[in-house]
Image 1 (spheres, rainbow, N blue to C red):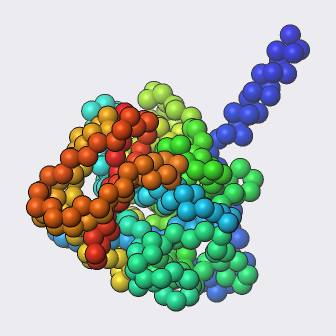
Image 2: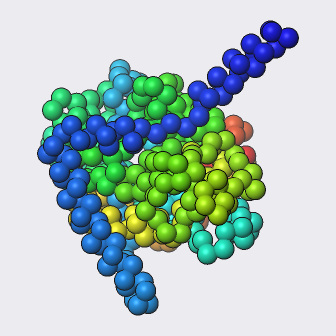
Image 3: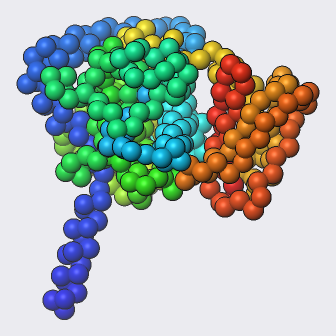
Length: 415
C-alpha cells in the first residue's frame, strides 16, 4: 500500500511538472527594476488605451474600419544551435515555418479546430464570439540591416547567435523592426514568455522553450513535447506581446481587461470538461478553450472578439515599427499564386500556378531536414504540374519553389 501511495505521489508530481507555466508575471514585475523601460511601457499603455477607446466607440456607432492585411516580418533565433550541418539547419528552418503556419492559422481563426467552437462549444457561451485578426506572419527574407549578420535574400533564421543580453536584457536593438522569436532552453519549467505591449522598435522578442516550439517530430534538441506540441505556446505568448492578459486576470476572480471573457477564478490545465464552472460570482462557465488559459495545446483553439479588439488596438500603435522592407513582394506574389493539392496526400500531388512558370527549381524537404526530391523545371507552359514522392513516410514536408527572383514555401502533409 505504501508503495502504491509513493508511486501515486511521484506520478502526481510528474504531472504537475508538466503543467503550462508562462513567465509574463515575473518578467513584468522585473521590468519595474528598469525605470527607463518601465516608463516606456507605461507610455505605450497610454497610447493603447486611447486607441482601444477609439475602436470601441466606432464599433458602438456601427463604424467599421477596413484594415489592410498586415504582413509581419518574423526572425527566428536558435542561440544554442551551433556547428550545425546544412541538413540540421534545414530542419530548424522547417520547424520555424511549421510554427509560423500555426501562428497564422490561430490568429486568423483558420485553424481546423475552430470548428469545435463553431459546431459545438459556442452554444454554451451566449454572447461570446470568436475573433480573427487580419495579419500574416512571414519569415523575413531580404534587406536585413548589416547588424543582423544576414545577407539580403537570406531567411531570417539565426543559429548560435546570441540575442540580447548585457544592458539590453531581453531586447536586441540589432533586431529592431522584426517580430523576434527566441527558441532556447528556459529555466524553471517556463514554457515561454513575452512582455505585455511589446514594440518591435525596441528589438523585443517572444521567448519559447526549445521543447514547445513548432509542431511535428521536430529536430535534434528541438522536438515538440506533448501536451504542448502543437505550437500553441507561441500563440499564447504572442497574445501577451499584443497586450493580452491571462484570462483569469492574474488573481482569484481577477479582471483580464476584456468584457466578453467569462470570469475565471484561476488558471486551468489539461482538458477540462465543458461543465467546468468558475467559483466567481454567478459561477460562469469557464472559457477553457481560450488561448490565454493554461490548457493543453489540443484543447485551446480560440480568441474572443473582445481579445482581438484589444490586440488590434495595440497593433495599431506599433505596426509602423515593423520593417516591411525585409519582406519580399515577389515572394509574396509567388506564394499567393501557388496551390498544392490534394493536401493531405499519399505522396502524389499537383502544384497549380496562377501564371505558368517557364523555369523554376523545386526542393521537397522532410521533417528531418533531408532533401527528398529536387528538380529543375524548364520550358514549362503548364499551369498544373504533377509530382510524386516515392513511398514517402507520413509527416509534414516543405515544398520550396525558387525562381530567378523569388522563393515560395508550401507545406505538404503526407498521410
